[in-house]
Image (cartoon, rainbow, N blue to C red; front, side, top):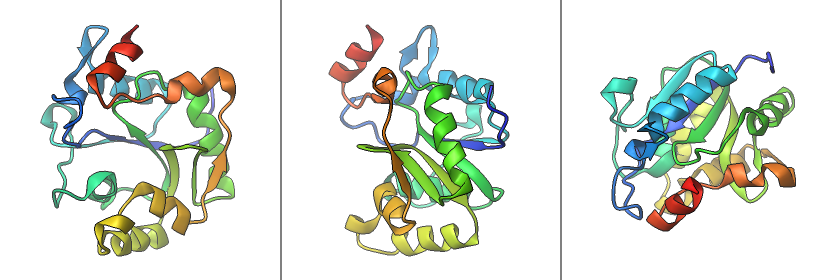
Amino acid sequence: MFTGKWNALILAGGRSSRMGRDKAMLDWHGQPLLAAQVRHMKAFGATELRVSGDYPEFLGIPDRQKGLGPLGGLHSALVDASDGCWLIVPVDMPLLRQAHLIPLVKLMETSAAACYREHVLPMALRLDRHVRALIDALLAQASGGRSLLALHHRLHGSTIECPAELLDGLRNCNTPEQWQAICK
């Protein structure tokens, strides 16, 4: 097991409009998908764990301002968080494993942000005063510049290839069809 210190933020505050119902509450092997992600992040070794979204039963942190997307959720949930390495994980990626996260955390020694090529999430982020200021600046922009991808670019983040045997774990489910495919 990897012993580097890292924290996790599960992004679960979206509208789930393409799914047609709350993705965080989808049944994943007898429990809500959000509960499974919380359990996974704890088991994988997260030192601190936060949930972005209005889920009091998970100590979720609602968006301070609605309609700002994942970057807004990240901002709301981490505004008073401790500095350090944070893994930003979407609730709708149930096949994600520790093997996906370790390479991203290891990149925090040399990079302020890291993600897999073609996949902005999961993202490792070295949270500090500079990154907080950049998030604030991005949120003040028009909607086109308010994204996790824009944050990654502005931080000159690292991008790595995902090994072929792990690619399946980076699938997320935004539609009922994608959810059915993941459940099989």
